[in-house]
Structures are given as structure tokens and as C-alpha cells.
Length: 223
Ligand SMILES: *Cc1c(COP(=O)(O)O)cnc(C)c1O
Image: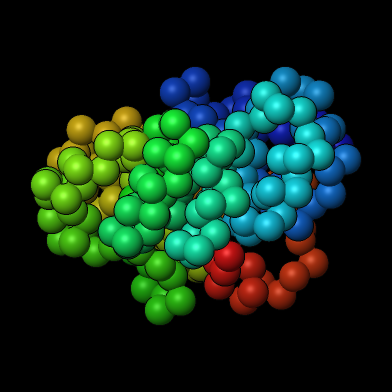
């Protein structure tokens, strides 16, 4: 099957209220253009440099989602065009995003990453810390960031029961907030994530094929 076939198939089976972000990291421009030709516009990258290069080379109506861990010193490179930052995991990063957003006279939508996986190499806030931040005065003072939701990555496992438990814990927390976006689910687990209440799935391999990088590196989620 071609990229466009796989993309349109997945887009047609997920519910209408769930957004599909096509994760194009490590994949060439031509692959993105093929996906783009189906009318798809939301693409996800996990490395700042790669996203900057692809943004420069591709049509400007593409919505760029930064899905990986974001280092503070790299925010400035994407602040002018990023459409949603999924992986915010510290207040200091939010402060930097706010600063850069002000420079570019825009409001940057962000998701707080919550650590739901058991692996130690995954980033994110605990429920307690996220909750404290969401209600805080210091967050309200960041005029140019808009926290629109939460993001989570489940443990890299085939164990459906564990995945289900992790997704449903994030959904329960999400329900205590007034956010609109719950970004959870990837190629291997998006059906389960949707069943558990996801409103945005980040799908790479199932659309673009495997990435030829050792699994471990992929899941280290580095910027
Ligand atoms: C790579 C990546 C994805 C997509 O993974 P696939 O298994 O290829 O669908 C989703 N989310 C994040 C944060 C990623 O780094």
C-alpha cells in the first residue's frame, strides 16, 4: 500500500472528533508531499532542526506539530511557525515559549506532557505537578502560551491491559481539566487510545513505514 492509501485508510477509520497527526520524522520531503496530496495538513516532527528544514521546504499551509522533547534553547527556531507543541514538560520551557511567542506577536498552543509510562526515559509532569501548574498564578502570567490540552506516551509494550490502564489514567486526569485536546496513541496503540478517550493521535510508522532506527533510539524521544 502507498503512503496516501495508508493515510486515507487510517483517517477514515478514526472517529470524526479525533485528529490525526502524521508523524513524518526521519522521512523525506517527498513522503510528506504524497501525504499532503491527499489533503492532509497536520504533520509531527520530534527534532527541531529537522522540522525547521522541512517547514522551509514545504507548502506553508502545513500545520507543524512538535511532538518530541523540546529543549529551551531551541524554542526560538520554531516559535514563528509551530502550530502545536505537544511535549512541554517544565515551567521553564513554557516561560521560554512565552517569551518567543511575544517576540513573534503570536500565541503558541501547547500541551503539557504527562508521564504515564513506567519507563524512566520518558519525559513529563506527574499528575500532581501538572495539576498544581494548571491552577497556578505563574501560568496565568504567561500571556502568549495557550495550554489547550495534555499529551502522554504509554509504555512501549504489547500488554494491552497495561496500555489501557495508562491511557485511562490520563483520560481521568484530563476530565478534571477544561482542556480540549488529549494527545495519546501512536501506530501500535491508537485504537486503544481512542477507545480510552484520545482526541488526537500521532501516527508515524503505520503511515510512512518503519524508520530504520533502533527501536530504543526512537523511543528515547530526543530533540
Ligand atoms: C515517533 C513518535 C510517534 C509516532 O510513532 P509511531 O509508532 O511511528 O506511530 C508518536 N509520538 C511521539 C512522541 C513520537 O516520538
